[in-house]
Structures are given as C-alpha cells and as structure tokens.
Image (tube, rainbow, N blue to C red):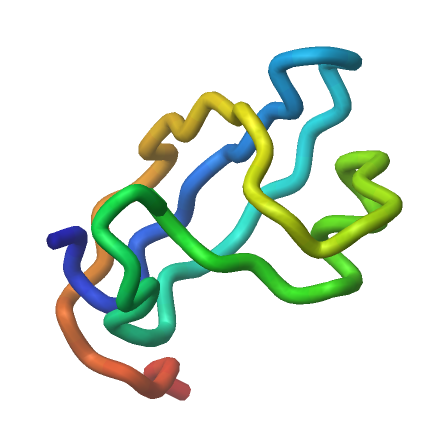
Length: 71
C-alpha cells in the first residue's frame, strides 16, 4: 500500500542487520507476506535461504507514486 518510490529501512529481527530499499512494485502476492526483497538484499540481512523471515520495516521517506526516478 506504500506509494512507489518510498524508501524503507528493513531490519532482520534476529541479528539487527539493516538494508535500505525503495518500493518499486506491488508484490508480494501472498497475504502472509509484507514485502518481497531481492536476493542481494536478503544476503545483506544475513538470510541464507529465500524464505519468509521476521523483519521490521520502517518508512524513511514517502515516495511520489511514480515508478521512475526524476532526473
């Protein structure tokens, strides 16, 4: 439900590792998921397998709803 371009801080609930991401699509499709992340972001958070994990998501900056960056 966040506008495209919103910047979020995602924190691994178990180890405290953090990654900042920008919302760029309308996934996930499964109701039990809050968001999907890339394999690179998962690795940064210390996840060795691509499965559901407990994370905290904080909004850093609301996006403008556009899918491309302004130049």
